[in-house]
Every structure is written in C-alpha cells, then in structure tokens.
Amino acid sequence: MYWFIEKGSITSTPGFKAAGIFCGIKKKKKDLALIYSKLPSIAAGTFTLNKVKAAPLLLTQEVIRKDNNVKAVIINSGNANACTGETGDIDAKEIQSFCAHKLGILPGEVLVASTGVIGKALPMTNLLNGINSIIPLLSEQGGTDAAEAIMTTDMKIKSFAIKIELKDKQITLGSISKGSGMIAPNMATMLAFISTDAKIGKKLLQDILSEAVNQSFNKISVDGETSTNDMVILLANSASGIEIKKDSPEYFEFKNALNELCIIMAKSIVSDGEGATKLVTIKVTGAASETDANLVGKSISNSALVKTALYGSDANWGRIISAAGHSGADLIPEKVSISFNEFPILHQNFKVNLDEKKVSKILSNPEFTIKIDLGIGNDESIWWTCDFSEEYIRINSDYRT
Image (cartoon, rainbow, N blue to C red; front, side, top):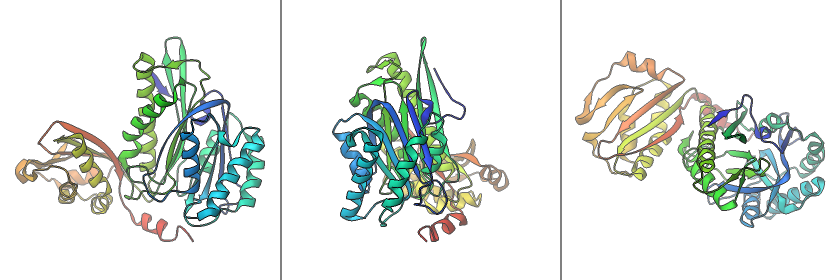
C-alpha cells in the first residue's frame, strides 16, 4: 500500500537535505541545487542514449560504475557543460572535488549534473562561490528550492513523494525533476533525482530503476529530441532499516510505488512541455508484439503533424494512422481502429464515424486519450505526449540568446 505525500519532495525521505539558490549562471532565477545525505547511499542511474554526452554526465556515470557510495548531488541549470571539450571535463571534476571538500566527504561520493545551453563554458567562479553559499542552507525543507533551481524552460516545479506502508513500518520515495523541451523516448533534456530510505543492493536497485524508467520516462515525448545531459538517479540510504529482497512482498510494493512515482514525474514533464496546452495519452492495443506497440506509440507521440492537429482540436485521424504506418511495426491498415477517449472515429475497413463537434469538444480538453487498436495481436503499450503550439516555436527560436 502506498500514497502520495502532499507537497512531497526529495527531502521527504528521512536523512536527505537539499537547497537551491541563485549563483549567477542565469540572469535572475535559481540555478544551483544540492542534494545531500549524511548516510552513504547506494546509487543507481539511467542515462541518455545520445552519443554526444555532457562532461558531468560522463563523470556521474563513472562514479556509479565504480560502485561508490554516494552522499551528494550538485546540479546547475542554465549551462549544460556539453560539447566543451577538455575544459568541460576539468570543470566537472573541479565542481565534484570542491563540493566534496566543502562537505567533508570524498570526491567519489559526489554526483554532478548540469542542464541548459550546449557549447558554453561554465562560469566557474560563480559556480564555486555558489557551492560555498549553498552548503549552509541545506535543510529538510529545501527540496522545493532545489526543484526550482534545476528548472530551465519549465513553467512548473516538479516535486513528488510517496509513502509505502509495510506492516508496521514505512519506506519513503522522494523526488525532484525537470524537463520541458528536448523531450523524447530514451531519455530527454530532463533530470530526475529520487531518494529512498530503503535498504537494497545495488544490482537490484539498478534493475528496479531501469524497469521503472522504461515504463515512464522512456515513453514520453514533447518534441522528439534526445539531449546530451539526461539522467535519472536513485539514491537509497537504508535509513528505514527495511530490506528489499528480490521477489519478497516488500520488493513488489517498492517496485510498484517507484513505477507509479516515475509515471507521475514523466507525465508532469509532458504536461509542462514547451508551449503545451494538452496532455495526451496514446494507448496502443492489438499489436503483434510489445515492440510493435512501442514503435507505434513512439511514432504517434513524436509526430509534429499529429501534435499540431491536437493543438487545433482537429480530429485528423489520417495523421495518426499515417504515423503508425511508418513506425516500422507490423500493421494491416484495414484492421486499424482509432478512438478519442471512448468515442470511436475509425473502424476496421476504413469505416469512419466522425462527429466533428463531439470530437472537437473531446480534443479541447486539457487531458484526453487516443486509442489505436492495430487489430492483429494481444500486446499493448501506453505513451504520453503533448500538443505543439506557436509558443513552442517562440521559446525555441531565441532560447540561447
């Protein structure tokens, strides 16, 4: 049994503190966040599949691969420290070492993350001064400030937590995340940090996280772009004393709660997509395989033609079936049917039942579901996307300047 904590955050988990401040990377907004656990934490992570990877991401990957215990994550926004060559690598390591020194821990106990403009060197003086300033502000109430500090074009703070009831004890999962544009399957320009007080081995933690990410963050799309800095990090500090073992009752409760938390986080990113006005669930059924269902879901979610039609509340089902048709999935066009919410508009053999007014009303809602049944199998998949508005173009036409 689990439930969401009202105004939950990364610091809802016992033993975790956080803070977020302005250090001068951006013009005015908070741009530096720090997450800290006095207790050493087991760390798991998933990372972008983009072949161009930012210096802090590569450094964090290295720490997690070495099986180090982790106590801190330092994150800046406004500058991605990506495509910055040797300078970027040196800067990322200096941030790690400086933060560790100031916290009185080892460099290998610090993860580093960045998000923002690609190709610009970090303003290191500002950033190191920021680390000096942020450490005294660490608190159990600092999760929201940290969530605000990692935002770029986000309009909403993304901060959630879940409490899991296990007999007479409880486990907590807390989180903060960011993401609004450059969002596509296989991670996107998004960062997500999750804390838990569960006691769990590294391999099992990594397996559970990877599964949760595949069912959530890897099934969302704002604009089909996959960025250079994307990561999801899960830290477990064992403070609850409750051990999670493979296939135990605690294991299934923990896994289900983490899956739900990641889905909520992923949907919050899509609903806050750059210029988005609608959160759209894409439910693919009747596929010959799960792979095919995912191919169709991904293709529809990424389609600019589908997304612009959704913004205009235009029931252009032709764009949906076209996106499915070039997805690479096995598909027999005559067997495809499409519905908006529970209202069918396309039946098999291309029989159309399109009540323009009724369907336009459905598509005018801030949330709705597109269901596409391929009619050739029993596998299915759920994806989440958003519409494209003029605001998306405005935001991205001058993002760097």
